[in-house]
Every structure is written in C-alpha cells, then in structure tokens.
Image (cartoon, rainbow, N blue to C red; front, top):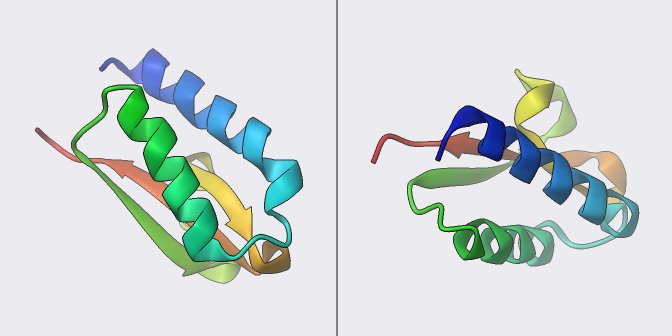
Length: 79
C-alpha cells in the first residue's frame, strides 16, 4: 500500500469517526478502526491508545476517545 492510500485511509478514518468518537470508549473505537483498516487490505500495522499528551505525530492519530483525553495512533509496520 503506498503512502497516498495510507494518507487517504487515515483522513477518512479520522473524519468519519471524529464526531461520534468524543464520548465513545477507546477499546470500542479501536475495534471499529481495526475493522476498517483490515477491510482495506492492510495487515501489518499497530494501533495504540495513548493519552493526548503522548502524541508525537498528530498525522498518525486516527481516532479520539474519552472526551478527547485519549487518542488512537496508527503505525504501518514492515510486512
């Protein structure tokens, strides 16, 4: 999967989920995001739930939960 597809996937995931995610439990949101990533054919990736202050690269955030206090960060792995 090339970088433009990853960017489009990330933007699509973040945009489609952002409004409903503000109060959604993080594990539930993470499961929904994983389903969407896998349906796009991506197999080598990591999703991690972190506090908002732990985010190093805002471009890797694909979800926000627990009122925005936690973020779900996507990282593509080699594979």
